[in-house]
Length: 94
Image (cartoon, rainbow, N blue to C red; front, side):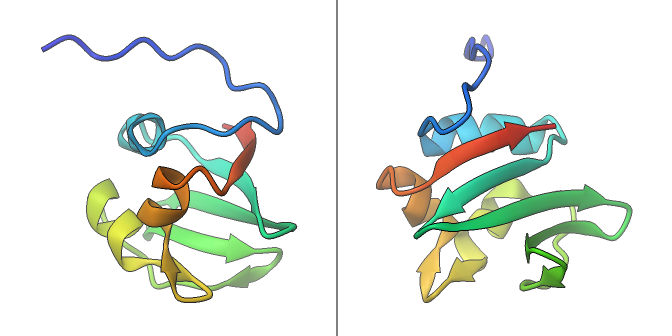
């Protein structure tokens, strides 16, 4: 199966969960805004984690982007649901 073609993400745009998952599976890191706060999904040797500023607000997850997105929540809402509902705007993709 061919990978989907995703162009660059302009700052402030919303993306689908499938688009987010594609970036996570590539090992990319993502900054996004949800409820007027900026969050960062890191990808380090420890694994993936969610950050708000200098504060890590999730545990580290290794190599499973779906488990990360389903398990990590912001104010009780899973990242997967935030992106499926179009409630987050991407700032930067590294």
